[in-house]
Length: 124
Image (cartoon, rainbow, N blue to C red; front, side):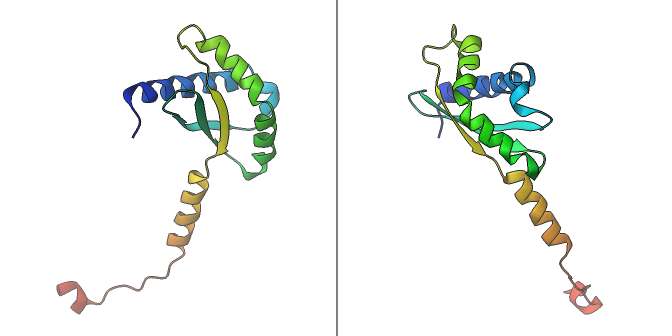
């Protein structure tokens, strides 16, 4: 369970990283649509795990490019939050597949062939 301080830092970092993607590192994203779905931070506030969600599967190479340039992301983050935090955390990027998994499960459930219940079963 995260402390209130960790939650506060997580929300701050999530907001700032989203703005960095929108304004400062557009050259890394190209035409890809990236969402910062979640940020978790270590108890010592030294490591931020950033979960990114991509709209299309073809955007996965963008993740590799972002992962190579995470020092640049950290620099931008430090410029934005450096005066309000003691330590700018190291960044670890992860792909959040929960949206694609939800789409897959929706497709599986909709393809199920569930027979109608008979009138006798409905009365029970």
